[in-house]
Image (cartoon, rainbow, N blue to C red; front, side, top):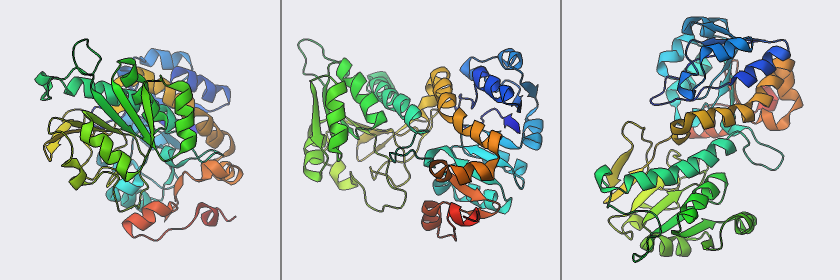
Length: 371
């Protein structure tokens, strides 16, 4: 199979889908890899490193026109719509649920779309979200440190334990990969940290890996309200169901918070856990609502592109190789967990959540594959 890797063009997106090690694996299995010139430069991967492993360095147009499988990081953007064509396999974070126009284009052009974010494992977890979540959680706390500075529009609060001063209070909702990452850094700076989740299993695991000064609470309305009254920073790490209509933290609940407090939404789900959150970019990362500073950058890992690129490729490569080695249909037929990521198939929408959210007709992956 011919794998094409373009340079990402989303605002401040510095990751690239494949590392030189990933190229080596494709070539070893008999596949051809073409990469857009300077695609990896923002992750400190020069073209020469790819060429050493057997990749061809080509123009953007050649990547899109020749590739059988497009191996990316972010969704298909309007500038890339013209390159979509029937039968092209798009393997990336597609986020069709949040992008109606993208969904229109991918359906019209009969592409085959496999979304990183919807692939599951046997435990019901999301293995291609987890590595980026770990970075996003840590990066979310780092962002809180930055935007708590007075020179960044914050209150001038140092998020650390300083003798003679009351330690800041950090509330983190969600004890998954992102939440644990945020709690790890926040507690390392000796803040007062509360971590909430509805899963006792996750809280028990958090108890094993986090310092004893982290308060572990069952997530319910009473505990959330108690925590947000007192917190200096609220970090949301909850992956919100795509068609859920309510919110974990409503606009009215924000009125209970300190006016100098800050919200960091790591999850950045559309109509997500925090009602007042909307996606922002690295160029314009914060806004105020109800007097509360919100930081809602939807691609936090891009700020740590060298680390993120390596982790992302490590996670996605086995799946990309399976598609390349077996072909898209056989790969999907044989792997029920990977099949959950199939969201477009030759003009048919195969992701239920997007169908319900956008009021579109859809079929199951099993139906379109003839199972």
